Image (cartoon, rainbow, N blue to C red; front, top):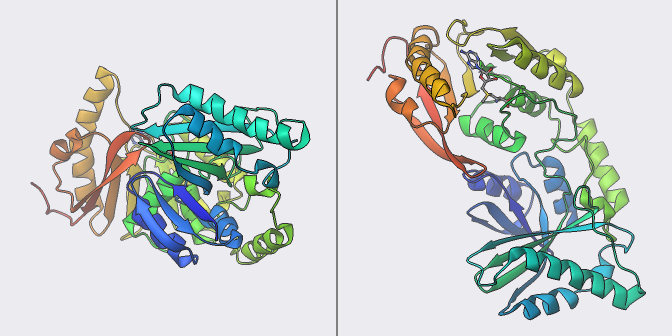
Length: 379
Ligand SMILES: C[S@@+](CC[C@H](N)C(=O)[O-])C[C@H]1O[C@@H](n2cnc3c(N)ncnc32)[C@H](O)[C@@H]1O
């Protein structure tokens, strides 16, 4: 059975492990930054189609010890790449390493590319071309100490790209991180959800899709479709079943607001592109002035972050007012604020009931849970 590795945002590994197990994955092992598992190709297609949290599904084609650059070349050249994809496919090699004793990762990338091309040349006298922007086949090289792992990427574009054209404003959160945060909040489809700082609407779209059983990968293509072992009939059947299981688009108790009209325009366009405009109510409002759209529910927000001095001052002013506004008006709600800014803990004047560490790329963040009970909880 093939071995796979699914990278994901750090902090979401346990969630991804549970999802993969429920899809039937075996030998599931979470490590920092992702989950190893084994399974058949149907599982691989399914994980690509259904996982909201994984960043990619990588198929491990080789794991070996190495000492020198020559060992790396040899390990790559020995593999029968022509069995997996056609010489007419374009390729790209990505190398990442932890504690790599070799001098240059760029050199390793070139070496691996050369070894793959040389293997094809030995086989058919032709070599695949490189396309770094939109390759058909991505080869990932992972080096950890003296361990070399080679992967073929079955996803292609990263899985947080849901295949629907999306317009962004300054600081959108990645879709798979947003979906993971929603899952961490325990929010259940069918119950009220509010993002009062919705920006381009990432939480809203993920939540609407979750409510309507729309699989995150239903609108996109995958790299596994280009591999020689691609089972088109199986994939067609899986897609058809997923489409048949979707619920009809209808108004949902999902609400978004933002201070800026431009942000709302972006959110509205993105919801429209996703065919979900009907599901979400959008409003232009200051988070400090909104009234809750229901008696209880889940509030989730990815707080603005300040990089320049003035912005930091603005945020320092916002936090205590936000704490007061939540306490005054949102009794009965649970608020989840996602931020990298530790200053919030002192300035909010509310004590979080949970602090969940999560990474936004390399940036360490916290998902803070506040159970709002009107008039209490003040430090
Ligand atoms: C980090 S962004 C949110 C990004 C969003 N999660 C997305 O994926 O696009 C923070 C948002 O807070 C909004 N914002 C800032 N101050 C606000 C306020 N006082 N009331 C409401 N929204 C505010 C900004 O316009 C921005 O869109």
